Length: 185
Image 1 (cartoon, helix red, strand yellow):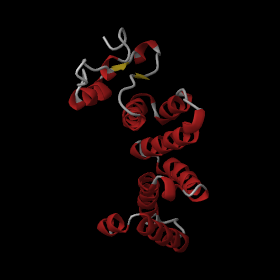
Image 2 (cartoon, one colour):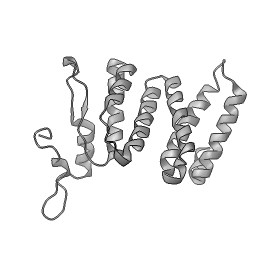
Image 3 (cartoon, one colour):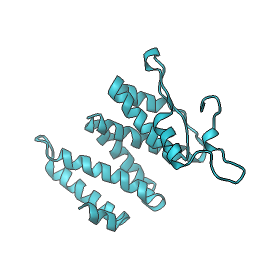
């Protein structure tokens, strides 16, 4: 029905109450997707709610694709998603890269995730993302920190360099959100 009546889930009754409550929107975001992988069709998300909600569903679909067709197919699908451009183009690109990193990590490709997160971390510093979107900057840095902590335990790891980077990230996390950073320690 959502294909025949696009946008139905965002409509409301005359009294202003929405057709679809939060629980229904969550169900739609998780289950209402168009999929025919056997015929070679790509996963097509049905957009509901805000852009932030769409990224959670996009990540879920990309991970499903990674488990069925491989990480290359998932990352390729993410790269081909249409962009909205405009004033939110850079943010959208950033979030897409973050989703790619999360999917790569979940698909047991920590090196790919690490490279993507390092690039995003550089972006957060260059554009002072912690000032504008501290929670997003915190999430990127936290994910990078967790991967570095895993990597430091490898035999071939440069422990001195990684320890310094871990310490620097911990300091950056503390500067962004001291209470949350202390809770993570």
